[in-house]
Length: 602
Image (cartoon, rainbow, N blue to C red; front, top):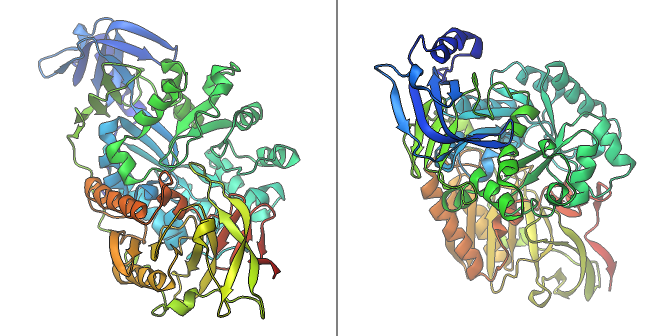
């Protein structure tokens, strides 16, 4: 397989030394900029950078001795020279894009390094899917490091995935060139309880000398949290408040603070630095999940850094948390994360550190974007047919498949309801008194309660799990279906009309996956995601335009939640409290047990 190669530091050392000494000419020199040194947290005026073989050779007050006949010169004109931005934890699939198109979308925003966990595709295609993501990542002109997914299924016994990840899979992946560690260990109860499989995956990663990603989605900071920390995860991005961030860094973990399309967890945690004065080198900024609309319209890691600064963080500290801190965490401080000799020559020119306009992006010594426009190619894999034919319903679904039968003789029922929490991943375990009509339990728009169904789509069983959800605000006959359903990635259908729910589910079966919205019996939005039912290999701008129509369609159905699509896609994530849905039933994530839909009959 052809890859975008870059010589290692030892292979380039002789050239780098010769350029720095002035014996040989640099490939590129950036002159007259303000060097933002994230190693020392200082800004040094009127400095030059010399680059050779894709790496920094010299950074100092005058690089004229590095200039030769063939040296390209870029005049910084007093602009800030900052390291390329690093995303410490993210899922490419959440962008609804393949790695190549994701890279194309974020490069103009200054992201030159990503640490990605492809556990979405792992749930659909297993180790083969991870390898496909890994291989396309290595083709890109920027650094995309892959973490081997740890939990498919995320909660054994509570869901059924398309494939299961084993410790043997993890050990094999640790030998691949682009694997940098183990993806987020979502099965935190398994770690806390000493589950042999989870500990074996962690051990395989540590034996390979790589980093174990964390995911402790619980507010309990007592013995269970300490047991999880003892199990080996080196970071965690599930904190939602200052106490969470402090607890993690005190236990030697890195606190990853995320700003994604729907997760706004930076402002509530960054006070650990801005007010409590904790050492910022143990904090990292990340996105976790960003859909294509956010990437195209708002940005990527530049958006996160700007947000951290707006929350009161010193700009230099915010930049450290998006560059050198991330590199150090993954053992790559000598490769990326700072403008220092030997490192990969990833650098951004910007005229302002607070508003952070991304004016010129260089990756591995090559200009990759200028004034918001990408200037390089992002090569694609030829995604095979078996990665495109993954939506198997087993039958044509009918409205009857979405009926919720009431207990015998009941006129009303007290039903458990999944309650949405805007801008956060957790849900609430609510209850609602619902009417019974002709033996069927109905949603109630007055209480903002509609139906939710999980449709099995990996093995074609025809299985449908039905329950209730609150918070979307939907009005009138409608349905929204998506084959993006973290992490099992069955199909989630939410609606007020069983007829439209059946139409929406069958439509995604026809197109091979994606997101669709029906209103009054008519399709009003469709985002095709043919790769594993998760991604499109079309350009990000095209996917974002369709995603925007989806957002508008949700609003036309009465939804007012910010980035409600992301909330929809997490309703089957059975490792984040409090209440979720799976192919096996309703899951109480506070106890990690299946729970009946009805509390009591009336």
